[in-house]
Length: 411
Image (tube, rainbow, N blue to C red; front, side, top):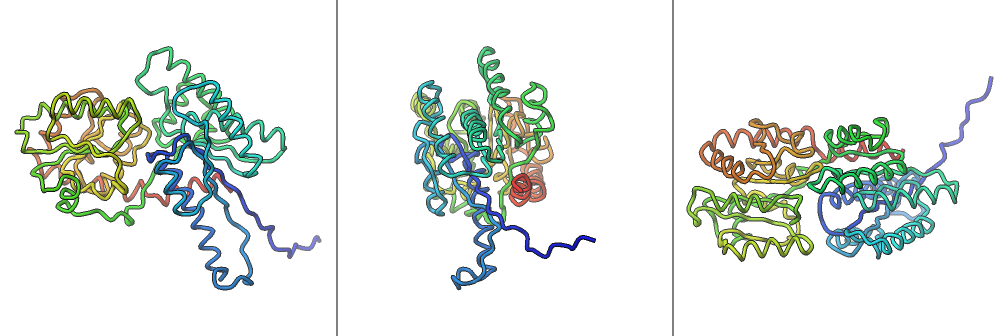
């Protein structure tokens, strides 16, 4: 009878590289940040348990992940990653717009980075990064014969955007080609998985759903009075607001137009839009505001930890045209604010109409106005919906579940 081996299990250190197109702070950036911080903390906790911090000679636990991040630019995401000392690599030729020469240059930057870091797991996020990283990863595997995992998270498929039909066809084709490179594709909503299957983006066995999540207990909300005073310098009788990137996909222009038609006097409410965006989207927002002299509309560009200010809002509105699974709605649920949102992407998985919030069709400014007026007229019903939304966020959309399910793919 063969003797059972008494050798200790072979230690492992897995190198994880996260890649994202832009270094601006948004949903995909927050997702990468949360995962990177979690894996980094896991290693630190192991070392503390073994007494490594106190004694350099203490036995080392060699089972851990090493984390690296790569992205275009040095925006807010870059600043946050550097603050926690996670190695950051800038992809100089990454950009949002399509430029064939820069795409080729970015591709070779990424491939060179793979040879430098020798990752075991490559986890790409966003459409642009997905294509270039996947192609570079395939070549890297072929040249090195190294067994690596290629994982892609789709934060809302680009073919679900409001675009001309010919663009949609090209994006679907690009998405199908991108999917070929990856071992697993994470969809942040059931909707994204369903549309991927319907459009033959990838085989169903390659797709899995892992919802975004937040750590509610770690959010320190300011009181309503504090938040309003910091945002607008005074308390307001009614604040309608949102936190969103200033892009066409967020549909913010419909919220502004709805506010113009509210059956309230201008001085009786304030509309606050916290976010930012790249030109020309940002300029369009300011131009519209200036054109109509909207004194009670506040455009507030990016502020750190904007989630802390959510209780300044009496009503939260996200009028998106396209979404994955927006963090801002989960955060608004945690803040117990009445929510109005559009029935796009994974939002109906967060908000059950008339139960945890109000759902409307996109591009319908009159519906936004109607729902705002309904909440004003039915404060008790709105309060109960907000309470149920908080409970749902705690039970179904917590960060611990997101991290654990994602880590299960890495082992």
